[in-house]
Image (cartoon, rainbow, N blue to C red; front, side, top):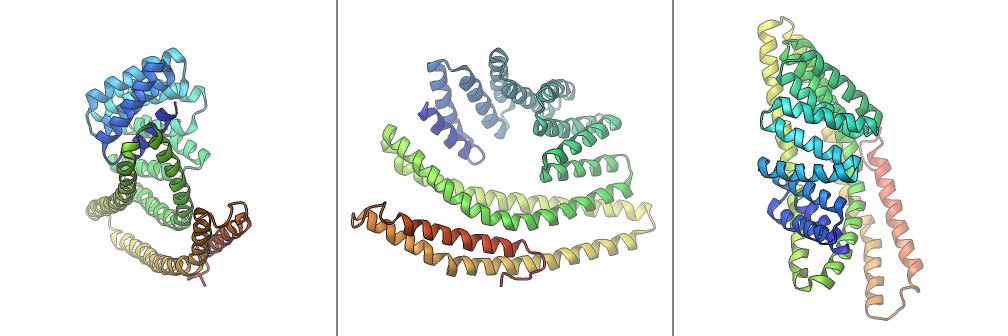
Length: 371
C-alpha cells in the first residue's frame, strides 16, 4: 500500500500541471487497488482519474469514472466519497449545459452533506447551485443559496469562499439590473482583495516553512520509490522541481488574469451606471480614493517585502550555513549525530525566532518597514 500512497501523492502534484502524467500515477493506484480488492481505494482512484480528465475538459470520460466511484462508495457507505462523486457529476452536467440534471445531482450531494454536517461542502454546493438558478432566472432560489452559502462560509471562516459569494451577489444584482446594489457588492470584493493581500504577506513566511516540510516529504517519497523503481529516481527529482516552478508561474498568471477580468467588469458596470444614474462623479471619486489607498498599501507592502528579503538573506543565512557545516561533519563521520543535536536545535530555534520576529513585523500595520 506504500506504493499506492506515494503514487497518489505524485499524481496530485501533477494533476494541475500535466494531466497525462497524473493519469499514469492514478491508474497505477487503481491497478493496485483492484489487485488487492480495496474498494474504497478503488473508488477514490476512479474519482481522481475523473478529476484528471475533467481538468482536460474530457467530460464524457470523466463522467464515466465518477459514476464508477459513486457506485462503489454507495456500496461501502462512504458518505464523504459519495458526496464528492455526486457533486462532481453535477458539476459536469452544469459545465455541459444540462442544468436540470446538474441541479438534481447537486441537491442529492447537498442532502448528504447536510446529513453529516459537511459545512465546507455545503458552501461549495450552494455556490454552484446559485449559478444554476441565475442561469434559469430563478432569482429567489439563487438568493437563498447565496445567503445560506455565505452563512456556512462565515461559520468555517473561509475568507476566499466569502468573497466568491459576495461576487455572486454582485452578479445576481447585475442580472436584475440593480446596478447600485451590484456596485456595492463589487466594492466589497475589492476590499476583500486588499485584506487578503495583507494576510498573504504573512502566509508567504509560512510558505517558507511549508517548503522545508515539503522538501523533507519529497525526500522520503524518493527513498520509497528508489527501492521500487530505482531507475526513475533522477527523472522524478527533476519532475518535482519543475512542478514547483510551474506551480508558482501558474499562480502568478492566474492572479493576473483574475485582476484583469475584475477591472474589465468594473469598467462595464460603470458604463451602464453612466447611462442610468446622475451620480457617476461621486462614485468615480470614491473609486479613485479606494485605488489611491490600495496603491499606498502596495507601496508599503513592497517595501516590507524588500526588507524581508534582506533580513532573510543576512540573518537566517548564518544559522543555515552552520547547519550545513554540522551536516557535513556527520556525513564525513567526523562526529556522531547525537553529539551535534544541541547545536542543530539551537540553529533551528534561532531560525524560528528570526522568522517569528519578521512575521510579527510584517503583520504590524503601524509599521512601514521591518526595522
